[in-house]
Length: 150
Image 1 (cartoon, one colour):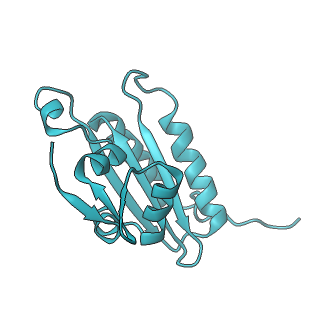
Image 2 (cartoon, helix red, strand yellow):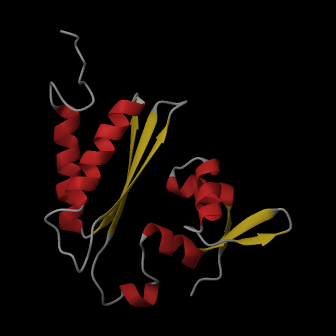
């Protein structure tokens, strides 16, 4: 087990997330952290648990798992909701229930930025990324939908 400890800022940088998002994960109990003085410290093993990575001893003879973070700029709230629903629905259908595909979406309204975090086996992750690519490059795709009044 690694004895490395990370600050909230280091974890945010490693995951490509905002510092407030990491603090939210800590407050909600999703990410374990130890408070030292006025700052949180996150153990490497707890960071691995958040990202779905198994400790090195477990990984040696186990299955491969992929951790992917996709960042999309210029995404409004409605498009983020539609895209998030599509990704979650796809992740929850047609995959091996023993090794579920995990998806987390985060939308930053102020920056009009969306992040999609995908954890799973290589084949399922690739399939979901291909779906995302198809949706993003479709002429009348999910992000380009306009509502017209009759």
